[in-house]
Length: 293
Image (cartoon, rainbow, N blue to C red; front, side, top):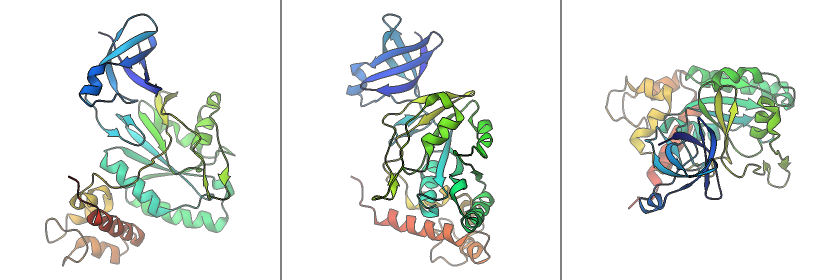
């Protein structure tokens, strides 16, 4: 049986790229019975009844999967945040980072609209970038308007499935249009009333850019920590996880425990205070979460 990868899902059809091109497929009824939904990014076995139509018979084991956006086997996430319009939010970025880390996806922080930022705003962003880089993250500054810094993205796209994610209006589609101009993806301005952009992407599709595949996703519509337990949260902050190895007590949550190396690192400014405060806020959110039954 032929095998391939789903590169687009739309209106009940799955478009599977394979050695013969792209085959439009439907899912067999057995998937609904077994509560399996094929996702963009899935490696599948399919049966082609002719050169244009077929049926997906099997979904191979996934490395990871995201619910919103619905995509599987993601290697890398470009977390796109704007310098201005909307204003850069480290709390929101940390929320994205936690979800990406939890799903074992490598994050790249990409700050757009640098051409619109003032000198003071750029200095503030550089301070934040220093903290994130110290934690081990790659931070790139780019402008879709001037194309400054965009060339930095290409090496990170090679041989990977990547997603571009971030809140509405930060310029994800604009950035992809610069990376591959023939896409001509729709973009919308920021809504003055809402202070954020309107979603311009309506379905998930993998797009070839260089030697990699990129998903222009509708954005994370859910940023809640439904699956993460309190004991797991620290592992989603690389600098906290590293410092926690020196905590006196195993299972330290770095809140009120004595001889906590994480709290010491915050006092010594090794860990940025805003990162620690976001950790505490997320931890409380997880503790306050309604139990699942």
